[in-house]
Structure formats: C-alpha cells, structure tokens
Length: 63
Image (tube, rainbow, N blue to C red; front, side, top):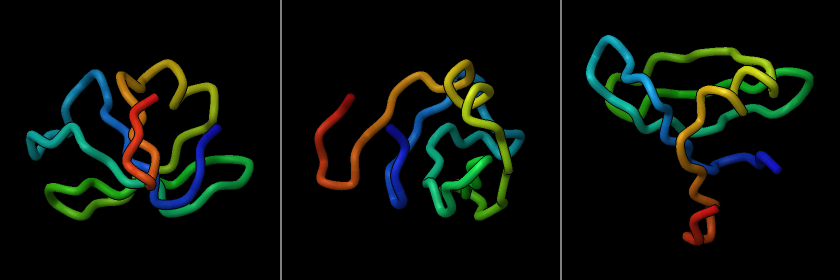
C-alpha cells in the first residue's frame, strides 16, 4: 500500500504547521519527511494507517 516517494496528508499538523509528508523509507516501520521543515518521523504501518487522512501516489493519483 505505501511506497517510496508517496505523499501522505496527516490528520494532525506537525508543530511547524505542515500536514504533508513524503515517505522516504518503507520496511517494518515507515520513515516520513515533513515537506515544510524537513524533519523525519518513524511510525509503524498501523500507526500511519490511523494518522493518515489522504495518500497521494507518486504518479499523481489520490487514494
């Protein structure tokens, strides 16, 4: 479901104010990079599923 370079919109904003994140690593957990400030966040797949509001695939189609 989650692939590299996909963009995820989370329900709750990051302290910098950004809601858009890019997936930079996929494995047992998923590493996200904030597109506003560049900080990184590691979350489990289940946690990301709960936090995610929208997923935009790298080819541009929304899911």
